Amino acid sequence: MTVKTIQTEAVQNLLKKVAGLDKDQGSPRMKEVVFRLVSDIYKMIDDLDITPDEFWQGVNYLNELGTNKEAVLLAPGLGFDHFLDIREDAKDEAIGLAGGTPRTIEGPLYVQDAPISEGEARMDDGQTPGQGMWLHGKVLDEEGNPVAGAVVDLWHADSKGGYSYFDPTQSEFNLRRRVITDDQGCYRARSIVPNGYGCPPNGSTLKVLHALGRHGNRPAHIHYFVSKPGFKHLTTQINLAGDAYTYDDFAFATREELVVAATPMNDNNHGFNEEYLDVEFNIEILKTDNEELTDKHARARASVA
Image 1 (cartoon, helix red, strand yellow):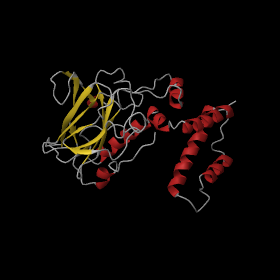
Image 2 (cartoon, rainbow, N blue to C red):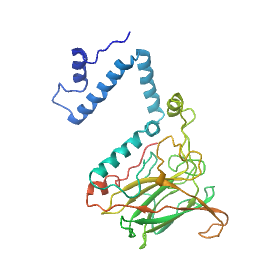
Image 3 (cartoon, helix red, strand yellow):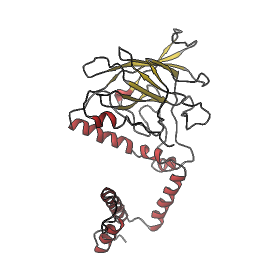
Image 4 (cartoon, rainbow, N blue to C red):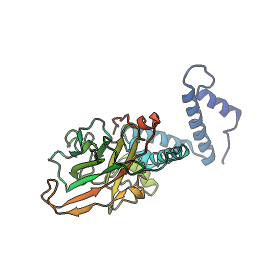
């Protein structure tokens, strides 16, 4: 039998006490968030007639998720990262700063302070197996003028889908570099072709995705931060065309404008002695004097796996 209790005096009084609304101490913002969060969960229990067994199964799952350190995988898998991007796009449009290269999710595997160089960099350590890749492009403003001195922060997986710092077999800062654009706004990087990756096969994230009839795979992709004072900071990534998961990314990061062709080349340029893939990605960033938009994401954080 389904019963409704959310609007009863007992439950409403309980919610206020849970969120500390009957106390003067504490953070008003935290109280606001907790009150809304717990209210919504109580209402869901009421509306869906969730049993005590189902509830404690969920609690035990959260314990498992924390133990496995997979919350950073489950969040994008449930669309939270993409939803936040949709909200940021809407905010930009509301203040007249829509346009330029589209943003998409940062992902959980960024590491700050990668080696930095002028104009060009080699991203791999020379010991990492994989097909060569020449990654290059221009950073332009909204009028099509080159943006010199922009920092293009790049990171991607190896040919097995692993990231340095989180994969102990890789060297420090392998496949992570920052390149400062030259006078023509150009950046260039020699690297290897990345592979996509999947959620751990016996992990907490895949358990939920399989219960939803979904997979936990990402396509081959390359992450970007692009920043310069006076411009809106850009967080984005490109997907390499032709990957089986290019348009079926479990993290919902694919945007049509960010699918980039990888062209096989045999010209022996850029230090390659065999066929490599040429990947060109040109970037448009927007001018702004809003320091919050230039600094908000540029304060790079080291993510936790």
